[in-house]
Image 1 (cartoon, rainbow, N blue to C red):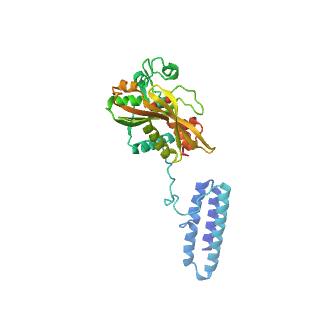
Image 2 (cartoon, rainbow, N blue to C red):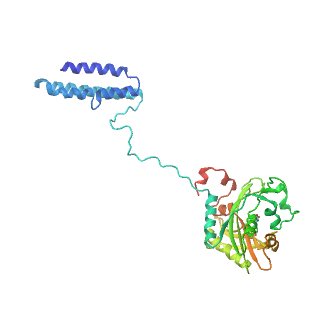
Length: 329
Ligand code: DAH
């Protein structure tokens, strides 16, 4: 019986010497030290050992186990492998998985959703229009004469002689009024295009929100109170609004809309866009009788709104699609 131990020892030592890599070492472990391994079998023989030899057999078998375990550990170190010493399943199915990375809406999309929400609650319908426009909707119907510098091919992305990428969402005012008899109360959001050189505040594509309200007896006071309502929801109830006289061909009178907000360095007036009372020539272009109908309109830059709200100081960051930037919003 004791001979069996010596045999096992010799064989194990020879096997271990032949181990060349992690998987082989694992084979070795299973064969000798595993729960169904040779050493376990050896202990099983203890019953058959004559009583007087039992202590000696036990001692020798234990000594062999310790020796093989030590040799195994040493070989494991030499091979630099972490050969599995656990006998449990290699795959722990109870471990929590890797959470999938969730996407999110772009900050401009979020801003558009906010605008839809605010103006929706004020009773405005949402309108849309094409990004490729004809000159009639982009200029003529908006009372922008042929000679106006805004029509300059260098200031627009013309596609052919008569079509261009819209340079303003005011085109949608025309499209809505052409199909809808008054009264009208809409907002429209979308992309507009201008061949501006890119810098911190200019980009050749950006977004605008256009508002149009047409009814009988509409006044500039309605315009200002609507804009005030909007900025109170969007920027906070302390935000002030002022309308600074200006000029747009499609409104008379016209104004720049400015808000007073504090971006951390004290409150300052900042321009958000233009507005005014719809010019009678615009009503005539769409077949509304300017003697009956009155209205106001506004057009604000969506990037500006978002940049003011979130303190973004460079418009280019919005379109670089760097998720490290975008996931902050
Ligand atoms: N379309 C003008 C622009 O892009 C903004 C604007 C001004 C829109 C006055 C309006 C308005 O509806 O009434 O600069």
